Image (cartoon, rainbow, N blue to C red):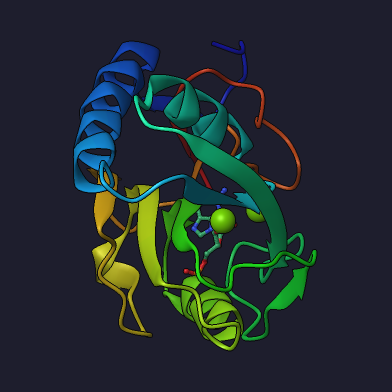
Length: 174
Ligand code: 5GP
Ligand code: MG
Ligand code: MG
């Protein structure tokens, strides 16, 4: 881990790897008869999770990206979500891959946005879930880890663009 003060290890690289193996097994089982699965990775935070998850799947998939910005450089939700990137999901079985679901605003906006295109199904896979922070209802279909309502970074997640490269999840002191 980075030798930075104010970072407390929360979820180790080994814990992440083991959990992804379990999630990938469940997803591969659930989508077995419907192929290929359309992975939609929500940038930037889920880039590392997506890369590890797709390598652990045992079913065919396609991989697309959307960028959603709700936080900017701040640590609390701005209340608006900008979605960039155009993808075609009509008639596809979509798995949204998120880094973290906090208030639920971002994922709800993305689901509403994609539903307009009439995909066959939309499911949600998130590495981290903070259920205590929820303001917009969302129950992910696949969750890596449920965490307390604290600010975390690493493994793709940032604190003002820092720490995305860490191989583990750390709690960032405010
Ligand atoms: P929501 O729209 O659910 O409130 O927030 C979702 C987005 O906020 C996530 O995709 C992520 O970008 C950001 N976010 C929420 N909580 C955290 C956190 O603890 N750490 C980091 N790095 N980002 C967070
Ligand atoms: Mg995200
Ligand atoms: Mg961020």
